[in-house]
Length: 249
Length: 249
Image (cartoon, rainbow over all chains, first blue to last red):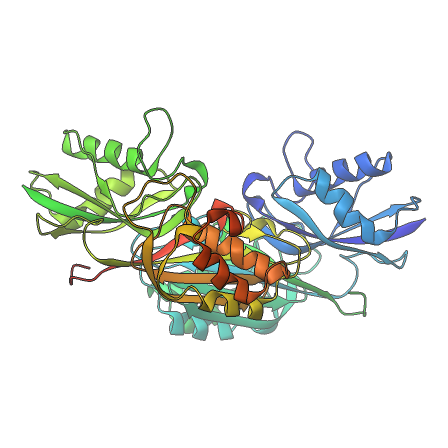
């Protein structure tokens, strides 16, 4: 028996998120189906980041066990022939039997993209959130600084989510503008349910002038979801980097 | 009667190109339909660049005449409410009655994007051409140099196209790589049918090593479509800039 780690890139537009659902298209469901076609056995991959409906990824992780003698480097070719155009495997490699993407220490990087121009640009619509209200990027970047480090992110977690701890560490949180597009880039050791989208929604309020940058710290300290901004739309969010601390790539 | 010039951005994926067809979705058809809804009169816009099926644009031009008293700056709002998500007006302004986008001297800039990595990346699939064969960007850039200037581009015009002259001027033609994406950026005073896509297809052959850069000059001089590369797929092509020489923006 060997354990294989896949790196999957996908356009989340057409999917009800990563996690398997019996009656809706999901990334996990498509991977399980394609693996079954190749291996002729029931496969249930273990996902790294269980991304929400509509969220995109360049590099999500899926792990599975098999007795097959197919060399691991052949899996991207075999899977990509069976997967739809909006899900494609980028690499596959054998990993130790004990490797579990959600139990290993890791750093994930997400980008939240905002198109900030007077009118929507159709070729950007699937991968960014459009707002015509001019956003002050410097104020957003200032507000973002208060979230860097280890904090209790309870204010930035979807209400009702059940988790052991709402403490997470953010290593990097940058807000940058290039042309008409603002990118919020955040790297952390883990993210609560909707956390990046709530951070984005809160920084958008700062950019609009509805919140002062310093209020981001007050919201963080209050540990109250109701004080933070709205959950920004899923289409703007992409998982862009996923690294494991313990040398397993 | 006043003449209004619209700037239209669109994702061409779902359309049979710019030009009106009675039984297929086209950009022109959508504009005519939306203008009719607003103005309650039959409108047939005059298009600037008659882009092919699947080609995208940030800034194509459409001109129409109306007796309406609606101020020109209101048209983007009124039209965007009626247009689908994949076509959006960026601006509208009144122009002189004699202004015709295809009869005025202009400079158009197209970008052809190539995704050059081992496996397709789904979030790039609609706006770039994927090839896993490693392309030599320096060789492509060298080959591109032979096309700059005024030439008879007969070798780079779709066979069977009927035009008065196949002479065009290319002001700029750059091939650059950023990350996994190669961009061919070309600015000219006009382009023959499929010209940019045939240039892209020919430079891809140079990048693959199937043609030497110097052979691009031989192909140009031969004035024979059969010697140039294949017409590269439409999805990689976007009209990114459209300027008029005679001070009309």
